[in-house]
Length: 178
Image 1 (cartoon, rainbow, N blue to C red):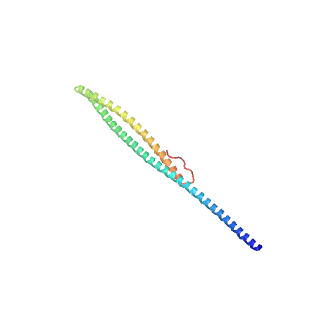
Image 2: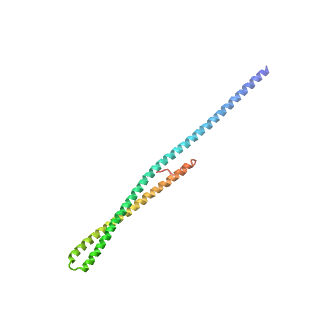
Image 3: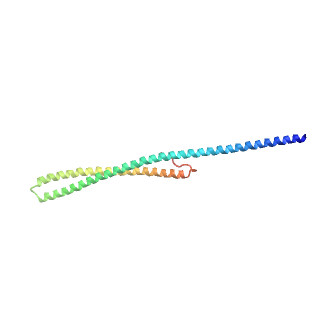
């Protein structure tokens, strides 16, 4: 009879010990799985944030490239207009020299030549003023182009950093595009 009691105690004791170990093992496995799911969620959120940042930065880059293109076209137009005025200036200066030479050579047509000379000198003065205006426009266009190119370079640098950070997902991202 004692053997029977002993056998019952041993069987129930081993069964209880086995159930205790299984529960402990299952909860550890569940905790490990839960931790891994949380880590995966964090990595996914980080990746999504970087993708959104990249999309924003790419949009800003495209807009800035358009601004640089417009500034460059404006500078080209200003240079072209300045070149036209400078060509007119050269022509008018040559015409003045021609009339001055004629004034010296022909006394009989002096009144007509003097009048033409005054007209050409007036045109030369107007063209000189226009040249100054066009030079100021060119300088302003060059400054605008430099400013837009600097902005574009900054955006390209930010994009390079973002791509670099995407290659190393474990590192925190640097700057967030503005």
